[in-house]
Amino acid sequence: MEAEANRFAAHLLMPPARIRANLQSRQPDLAEVIRLAALFNVSKAAMARSYVDAHRESLALVFIRNGRIEQVHRPNDFPWIEPGIGAPVPADSVARSPLPLPGEVTEVEECEPDCWLGANAARKVEVLNEQLLSQQNGYATVLLHAELNEER
Image 1 (cartoon, rainbow, N blue to C red):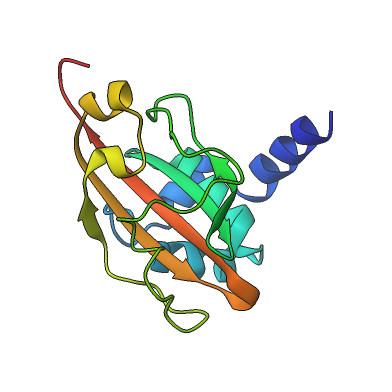
Image 2: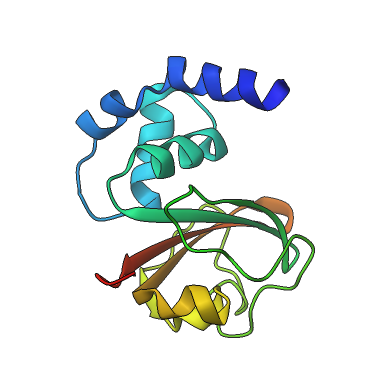
């Protein structure tokens, strides 16, 4: 019930149509999430989830703390993310290298789909991009953007 109440509150505070109307770029970008969080006066984490749900691209979020996956937000149209909760960040991820200073956002980087996805899910993805927002106390948020194969 709590999760349903949170989704209801998020749609009230951050309606998908209003998020899309305020996008400055069609390309997924965590810098947009930070800007929109300030505009809507909500937390970055809440905006990140609503941004992923409202965006027209196939996006997912991975929330990390101290190099381990703490939470995943994956809409139904996004392929299954293989490393589960509690697993270490994949070795080839931008989130594995030394994190930038808190508040900094990395450039969008292409990674191998099997870095974040299981073998079956990776076959459905043409290109997988990731971007990292470093936060305080070992926290980080990874935005994944999957360009799906047409024949999926």
